[in-house]
Image (cartoon, rainbow, N blue to C red; front, side, top):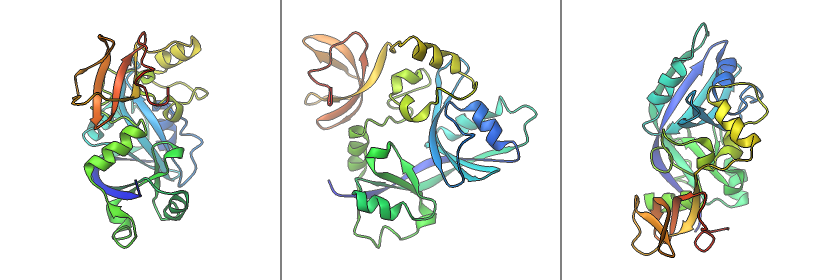
Length: 264
């Protein structure tokens, strides 16, 4: 599949003030203290129980200004969660929905070229060569390029193949971080305390696996979201996203999914 761009709505959260960096570092699962101006980093926002509130991408705009974005519908939820812990903190928090341009399936050269544009936000994992932009910050940049307009189906297929979950679809407020497959990019195990850290650290220190975890698998023909994943007449999980022959599924820890798991 060649490179394409796809327009989508995301929620954007603005956090600004003299305590913005300190506050975000104290609340998020990843290291925000070391984030340099212009850099961005994914982080999980957790409840004190360790369950998931949202997946955020945090961009440092200045020493006292940060922009966070998340899946549509989870901006206000994230603001409310942050606000519950904003006690004697000098920073302001607000949110709004904005239209983004998601650019996917880039070549190495294309990624290097478009990464130089102002406000380019690396998306997903580094190996995925993916970028996001707020639409009004790139105007017609991609309309003038050789990159074609993609469809929602193409975007979802790329997302599934990258094993990248969507909040409210592949992970919910009942999910624990270890289920999501995101701890490698959205959690720091060397930073200081944050709400929900106890569950994350306890599982990591004990080498414990979650009761189920998100996997990239081959879907059976006609598989639908919410249906069980069945191998050898045994239900081993549940489909969360299905894109033709590819799917994301929450697979039980005890299950042998090697026959259907891609990359196993």
